[in-house]
Structure formats: C-alpha cells, structure tokens
Image (cartoon, rainbow, N blue to C red; front, side):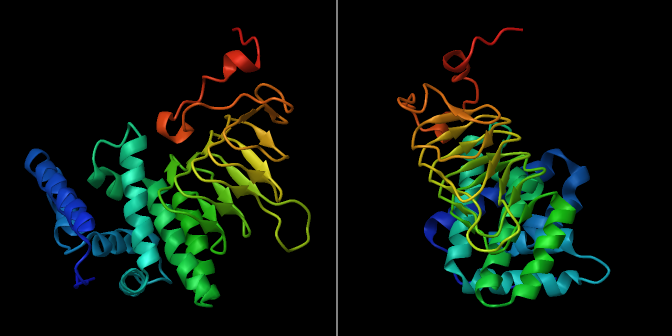
Length: 282
C-alpha cells in the first residue's frame, strides 16, 4: 500500500498531522523496538488520512478482503468527503481532550479501537449514502469482528465523538447521535419490536452515556444530558438532566429534575449524581 498524495489540508489539520509525526519520531528515539511499526504505520505516510487508511486496512483485511483494495477505498472516501475528514479530526481532538488515558494523538490513532471503529463507521456511512450498501455492510461486519463495536452504517453520528474503551457498543440503524457525545463501553442504542421504520434513540449534542447503559426505542435524550452507568432508559430524558437506574429515573424527579450546571462531556464525571439519587452505602 503506497502512501500517495492528498490535496493540502487546512492549517489546523496540517499542524495536527505534523504533531502526530513528531510524536511518532520521539517514540522511535526512545523505543527502538517500535521503529519498524511506527515507520510503517505513521512515518511512511504524507497525511493523517493516508496513515489512518493504512492502519484500518491492515486491521480489517482478511483472506477474502485484500488490504491494498481496502486502503485504496478508504483513501478515495477520505479524498472525496470533506464530512468524513472533518469527523476524523474532530474525533481525534475529542479523545485527546476528554480521555486522560490518551497521552498523545499518535497513541490514539494507533491504539484506541474506539477511535478506529468510529472512522470505519464514517467510511461505511459515506458508502451507504452512495448506495454502496453491500460494501458498507461488509465494513460493519469486519468492524464488529475486529473491534467488538457494532454500528449500523445507516446510523447518523455527529463529529467530536468519543468512544471510550468502546468494547460492546451497539448502535442501531435509525439511531442519531449528536456532536460532542461521549459513549463508554457496553452501551446499546437499540430498537424495540420486529417492525422496520424509525425505532432507535436520538441522542442530543454534548451527552455523556455511562458504561453498560441501554437506551431503547425511538426516544430522545436531550442536549447536555447524562446517562448513568448501567441505566436502562425507556423514556425521554430532558436536556441537562441525569437519568440513572434500571429502569432509569431522573435525578430530582420527573416533575422537577435537577439541572446540570456543567456540560457532562467537559467534566466526564460519572459519580456526582449519587448523593442526590439515593443513600448509597457499602
């Protein structure tokens, strides 16, 4: 798979790519064991788009799916879709800003399967909208097998999304996820019933969804809301409120729920609601 050329990126994108290259070079100088690895995956490429295409193609390739073919497909999608490129850079910045485990951008690109799975989804979604549904389904299947993340290519996901750990995340066909959302591992955005149509959740901008939460049906979670870990959400959640429990209830009660004073994706706090919700004692 050759590195190829892309049209020059915007200044912010170019600067971010140069930062990733420097991080890779610094790592090589300290960890000679990773020289071949980092040269092949990062330093041999002329842009983040090509490096990411190479990484994803290498991971998704199989006996029946050639890595070179996948690489060319991924690069073609990124070259033709400004929306896909915008999502990639916004997601990368979101992971670095919100996940304390992300020590550098290069680490995210190479090792964070939530970020990688989200970019496979973005490519599959673009192909789905071009009526290349068979290819999109194959990418969904390989994403699920390789990363343990199952996102239907017809789902609509905004930019600046953080899939933290990501293992076991399931997002259904008619789900919608807004910009700047954080989703932890084991989250399900699922449908109900056996009939088609609009049957999956609509997640607003700036929502934080805790580990193991399930949001079921064509319901809305309002902007800036927080869903506690392990919650089972079956009804609408108003903006800037917190839903916890199984089945979920609003902290403060449905008639006068407690309003969050800070955006949950900025604090990434998963515990502050406990004292207001129950007398939790071990």
